[in-house]
Length: 124
Image (cartoon, rainbow, N blue to C red; front, side, top):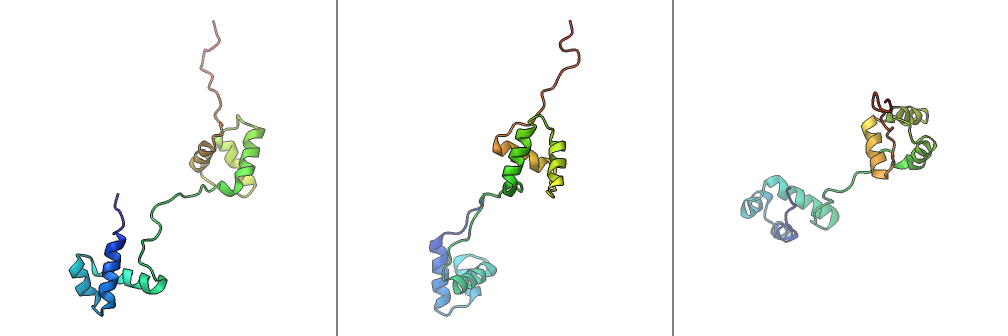
């Protein structure tokens, strides 16, 4: 995975820009693209820092705001298939694909699968 450039390099680039050098020579001097130097200069003028922005992170589940509702629906009928859970959520104006619902249920530790009965099982 690619990592952001070091803060030290960013600060040296800004120091070079503050001496009056233009972006192209600074980019060549530090082995960077001109657009990178321009963006760092803009960031420094706008925010006062050249520290990299947030890198990566966690994306919230689409059902996060509806956690209580999902828990109530699953608790009321734990054997409900995802298809029916999706329909129940749609009645509340929440339209999601089944995989999003499965991922949320898994993350919440909620069990929702029916037990399969094999054909011929229980017959002697």
